[in-house]
Image (cartoon, rainbow, N blue to C red; front, side, top):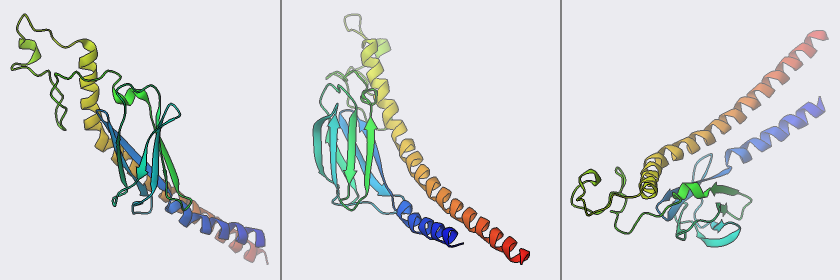
Length: 197
């Protein structure tokens, strides 16, 4: 009985720690990476140290702003995974890995209109690409692929953010459900033990 009570007490003490676990969200917009850290139970870490590494080499570092956010630029050529780590210094740490594919692989040409939320970048021309004059060249497949990749990244980023937050909430409910299951099992065991006497 003592062992069951000690196990129950340990699980109760572990619950709040898991409820305040730190998570990290990052999105890519062109060559800029931005995001923020957040606690599963609510709140964001401000003034927490963050660092970014590409292929194991330092890329950027700093402290989160008042909203727990960070922002930095990557070089023209992304040669490996970009790993962002966040450490509050209080034992809360989080990490996210962005593979090179998230950066499009092909830079958007300087003649393209910068990507804005809600629409893809197009070559800087008076008419759409299908109506280009015979002397002008249509964008190459690689450039079009980069433009589409950036447009998809911009449109999908809010969904990824929402999924990350929902995933964090589901883990808290899983922990709470597990605790209630343990309480229920302990209650049934105590009831059965009392009936035997």
